[in-house]
Every structure is written in C-alpha cells, then in structure tokens.
Image 1 (cartoon, rainbow, N blue to C red):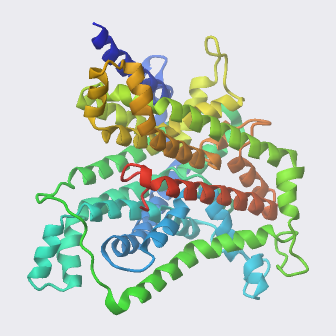
Image 2 (image 1 turned 30 degrees about the vertical axis):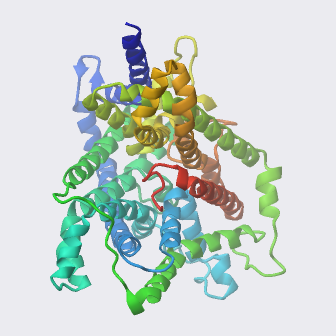
Amino acid sequence: MTKLAGRVTPALLAILVVAILAALPLGRLVVTALVGPSGIDFAPLLARLMRSATQKAIFNTLDTSLFGALLALAIGAPFAFLVALTDMPLRRAQGFLLLLPLMIAPQVTALAYMQLLGPSSALLGTFGLAPAPGTANPLLGRGGIILLYGVQHAPIVFITLRAGLTALPRDYVEAARAAGAKPWRVLLDVIVPLLRPYFLAALALAFVSGVGNLGIPALLGMPANYFTLATLIYQQLAGNGPSVLPQVAMLSLVIAAIAIAGIALQSLGQSKTGFAIARGMPARFALKTWRWPAAIAGLALISIILILPLLALVTTSLVPAYGVRLSLYTVTLDNYAEVLLRQASTTRAFFNSFYLSGLAALILALSAVPVALGLRHLPPRARSGLHGLVDLPYALPGIVLAIACILLFLRPLPLIGSLYNTPWIILVAYLMRFAALALRPVDAALGQIPPQMSEAAAAAGAGSWRRLLTITLPLAAPAAVAGALLVFMSAFNELTVSALLWSNRNETLGVILFSLDEAGLSAQASAIAVVTVLVVVILLLILNRLGSRLPAGVLPWR
C-alpha cells in the first residue's frame, strides 16, 4: 500500500499542477467565448466574425504569418544545411548567432530595424546615407511586418530542419554517394525528399509564431493603421478595459483556432519523420574551395539581419535625441542614466521584470523535478497527453493566455481575492506560459538517469526521499538550472502577455519600451533595448557553458 501511495501521490500532484497551469485558463476562455445564458451559443462569435474590421484583421494575420514563414524558411533552411551537413568553418558560431533573433523580444527587433532604416537613423546619418527627413519609415505596414517575421522566426526553421538533418540516416546518403551521385544530386534527390515532413513542421511553427506576435505588428502596423488580430485585441482592450472582455475573448478564440490548426499541421509533419533505416551521425559534405566563401556569405547575411540592426540600436541609444547624428561631440550615456537611474517608471520596470521573471524561473525550477517525476509514474499515453497540455500555453499566442488570465482572475477568488491590477497576475501568466521551458530539460535529464542507480540505492535501504535527494536531484540539477535560465530569458522582456496584464506601478520592460517609443522617446527606448539584449546574450553564454552537462537537444545551437 505504501509503495502504491508513493507512485499515486506524485502522479496526482503532477496532474493537479498541469490542470491549474494549462487546462483551467484555456477552459475559462472557451466558456466565456461560447457559453451564453442558455448554453452553448455560436451566434455572438459568428456576428463578431462578420464585422469588416475582424475579417480584415484575420486576413492580415494569415497573410503576414504565411509570407513571413516562407521568408523564414528561405533564411533558415540554407543555414541548417550548411551547419549540419558541411565542413563550413565557424558553423557553431553562426548557429549561435542565428538563434539570437529568437531570444530577443520582437519589439526590440522591430525597434532596431526602425532605427536602422528610418529617416532619423543615427547610424545611417553618420555616413550620410539616411533617407530624406520627413519621409515615412519604409518598414511601416505589411512589408515590414513580413520582413521582420522572416528574420524573427528563421531560427525556428533552423532548429527544426537541423533536428531533421541530424536524424537523417547516414546509410541513405552514403549509398547515393557510393553510386556516384554528386553532392548537389544527393541533396536534391535524397535529403530534401526525406526532410519534407520537417519542412512542413518548420513552416507551421513559423506560421503559428507569426499569428501570435504582438510586438512587431504593434510597432510597425498600428502607426500605419494596419491591424492583425493580436493588435486589434490589444487596441480594443486598451481603449475600453474589461467591459469588452467577452468580445476580445471571441477574437482570442479565433487566434487560438488558427494557431491550433498550425500546431496540428506541425504535428502531422513530425508524425511522418520516422526512418526505415537506423539513424547515424549526419554525413558531412566537403565544400573544398567553397568552405570560406560559404562561411563569409553566412556571416554577411547574419551581419545584415542581426548585427546592423543591433548596431543601429546602440548608436541611437548614444545620441541625445532621436535624429541627431552620432559623432564625438554628440555621443552621450545620458539615455542609459535616464532609464537606469532617474526615471521612476523605467527603474520600476527593470525591477518588476527582474523580480517577476526571476520568481517565475525559481518556482518552475523547484517544481520541475517533482512534476516530471510525477508524470513518469503515469501510463505513456496519459503522460504524453499531459506533456502536450503543458506545451499548449507556450505554443498558443501569448495574447490568448493573457485574456484567459484576465477572465480567470478578474473576480475575487476564495482566500486570495482578485489578482487583476496586481503584479501577481503577471507572475501566474508567466508560470502558465513558460512551464514547458522548465519541464522539458528536466524530463530529458530524468530519462537519461539509469534506473539501476535508484534500484541499487533502494536495495541498500535508501528510502524514496533519500534517493530523490542523493541521486535524482543532483543529476537533474543542471537541467533545472538551464530550464530556469530559459524561463527568465523568455519572461524578462516579453510583451505579448504583460501588455494586457500590466497596471499602474506594475510595468514591465516590454511595456515601458513600447510606451517610450509611442511617446517619441526612441533614444531612451533604444537604451532599454540594448540593456535587455545584453542580459539575453549573457544568459545565453552561461547556458552555453552548461551545455556539456545538459541532455542532447536542450541547447539547439550545440
């Protein structure tokens, strides 16, 4: 009986945690959107869908997400092939750099590109290359959104295709090469057909990421009166408050439906990735005289899509006002002093972001091991289903989760009251959204612990708690730390969730950056963006140092 209780209790705990973090908020959203006084009622949803503003926002969402995903495929696929299959120099460095846009907040990416290409560009102005004063920023509107979706989501394509290439059976490639096929024929006739499911999965993931993106269309679309579903929800809720919650819940459900269709397409692609021949180490193609030209071309593209925009962000942060040319006479650190030391709202936002992100990372790191252990006591199908449920808040657009949290915590709850207009609603949303990031590395680490170690300790008389403290926790600790860093990095400067959940004195960095840019204080917004990028890069370097102690696949650039 004691042994049975030892297995059932952790499993029930894991089920309870998953239900609170994933099933409860999404269920509340569905009830608000579809259930009326007389039961399930689709009429209000259909009436909302018939509005011209909604239909236009749906079309814009699908249009920009699709073409952005295609552009991401065009950028990410060549890098995946070069990094995984060739002897190109600096492969790992290029893979690491290509992943940075995914780790940088979308609003930071949008701000960096606007500072680079706008008529008041401090970087281009230094060389006399800036567009004529008074001209519109060329990135505003549909084209700019698609471009930045392609840049922001190219790492997703890179990660997905590289995973497929590393799983590619070496036998297929070696057989084709033994038959005399040239490398480009092997690529077109063998490798690309085998990777079709991964191409489908990569395209679907990039599409879903575009559907829920708020930072890029907010900075590039709203000034040009170009709305996607995410920015339409943001505008309506910001302008009318909780009174429009039923209406925006319906729009959130539309976003969720589009995203789930994309996730289903991605799952369909992954379900067809089994290979008949045993996998082996990926075959390497010798580029010979093309080794360094390929490396230089890759670095040039990374410089254009990543380094130049970040450099423009830095130069803008170093001038006294947006539009001033950078020179020895205009360079200043005053913007950094302003946002880090003087402005109450920005210093408060730094504290809030550090505090809430750190607390979410700590809570999820401490709970990841017991939850992962509890899930491992369940049957395989139940475990797989619950893992999918944990992944859902992370896979779905953040704005959907934010609306669900408002609906869930607007009214007072027993014992805790209402969390609305408090920082705790942001913390709970972070726990819900990023639980998957903390759980995946720990689950992978637990899967690599030999069961003989625990069995030997049990035979020596060690109880379950002693085995947990002396065997499981030490071996899973590096993965838990990696998961915590991933959670902190993702929550630190996110905008999609906190844009709808922040309140007075509870601003986060993503919100304050967006507000400063809207107020015309682009130099100060750039200073905040530069600091957040530095924090992300430092955390990535720490994760890279932990790489040798982590399960394979936790760090996608290794």
